[in-house]
Amino acid sequence: MSGDEHDEPVLTLMWEARAGEGRGDDLLAWARPRAAALRSGRTAPLRTELFRAPPDRVLCLTWWRAEEGAELPELPEPPAELSGRAVHRWRFASVEVWDGDSPAGG
Image (cartoon, rainbow, N blue to C red):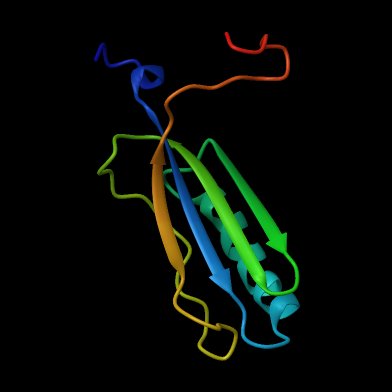
């Protein structure tokens, strides 16, 4: 690596939680400020996106310029009364990116 921060790979962290019965809105309300707070930390992600899948799932994706094993801030486990199960967490390394202007297949 040349030391240029843009030489580092992009790592995406996925945080997915399922709310307890009838608590989807509450889980989203709990996750929203915590996802926003990731942007104010010492190391901020390139992008943070929060998703909802009715009736009960909340997903947060954050994109970072970081190596695969880097220690990065993540959303915590929600309070037990909001959660239907343990949070699922995955890390993905970017392989290739296409945008809306890229031709298909290339």
